[in-house]
Image (cartoon, rainbow over all chains, first blue to last red; front, side, top):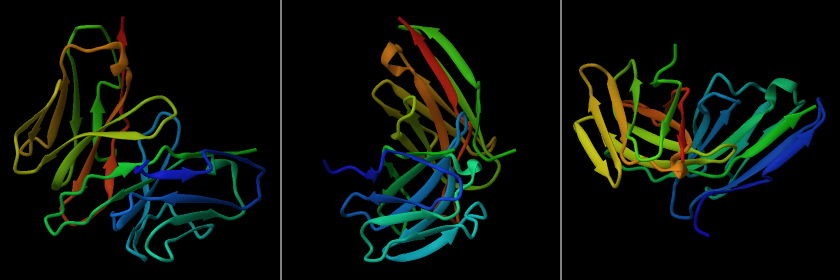
Length: 116
Length: 111
C-alpha cells in the first residue's frame, strides 16, 4: 500500500494521560500536514512540515501539543495531559511541494481519539 | 465565519439525479480543492481547480470557479448510492500552504 498510513486508528484514553499518534506519508512526499476534525465540522489545520522542518503551527496547537518529523519521513503528534475537548479525529496528509504551489494533499484514514 | 463555506449543509436526492454543491470563500486563493469523506473515514481528493481556471471535469464531476465572486460549485451527474458522503471544499491561499476547509455538505443519494 503506497498511501498515507496512520496508527493507531482508534485511541481511548483517560483525561490527563499523554497520547502519541504516528503518520507515515507517501514516500516521495516532502510535505506532511496534521489536521483535526470534530464531528460535523471540516478539518482544521494544526501544523505542517517540509522535510524535517516544522514551518507553520496553528493557534489551535496549544503547548500541550507537539509534533515532530525527525528524519523527514514519518511524523508523530503528541498530546500531553489530554482533555475531553481533545476528542476528535486527527488527520495526517502529505504532498509534494512545487514552486507553482499547486498542492494536492493526500489524506490518511485518521486516528480517532476519545478522551474519557 | 470561516473560509470555504459550503451550501447546502445537507442534500438528499434520488439515484440518477444530479447534485450541485456550492462553496464560498473570502480571501485570495492559489487553488480550490474538493474532497469526499465517507462516514468516519479519511478524506479522498476529488479534483483541484487553479485560480486561473474556470471549469474542470473529471468523470462525472464538474467543478466551476468564479474568482470574482469567490465561489465554486461541484456538480455530480447521474448520482449513485455510493456517492453518499460528506463533500468539502478546501482553499489553498496564495501565500500559504495550509488548506482551509468548509463545514461540508452531507449528500445522501437514495436508491
